[in-house]
Length: 242
Image 1 (cartoon, rainbow, N blue to C red):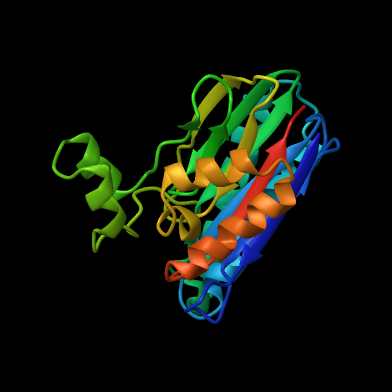
Image 2 (cartoon, rainbow, N blue to C red):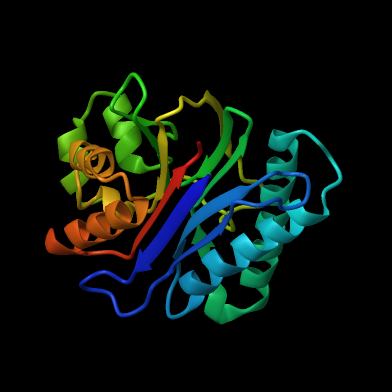
């Protein structure tokens, strides 16, 4: 297994509110763990939310004696949500903070995925060129599903940054879970919307497929997002599972 991660503030924003965690070795009873988060909130609250949430998820997974990956991840997310919400309520400066979350763990040839918000996990390669495994919890994604706008319109819609689920936003948060069978030449991409709002899926696919070196591919994707405007923080994590 090979993995490479990179995060960048982008061309406009001074602060990077994205955070990530990547371990190709065991975390608790999970053989590996990959997480990307995109924080939101005024001043430093978004930066705190993404970092704190990932730290709490990793700590929970590390202590969990269970052997069922979905249960381990679900429990970790629920605990992180509870703790982040408590922090938000205790500190006026952190009121209203929250974060997206996308998590992956690979067990054998199975990829287990959880997501909240609009940070995404893709698989590049295999029989299809690029597959978005996660589904955005966002206002524009709901509009696309209802047929009100198309995918191209969603990318430039003024409400594209409004998400409908976030860690720390309510007493209960529901993650979506996915289980995917991996093929030998698959590449896994976890990313924040600072990439996907700036670079089309087809370009993401081409960049990853044309670069066997995942470090080169990830760096190129960040450069492309910045060249197209870089209006948000950009985090790219690529995993070569086999």
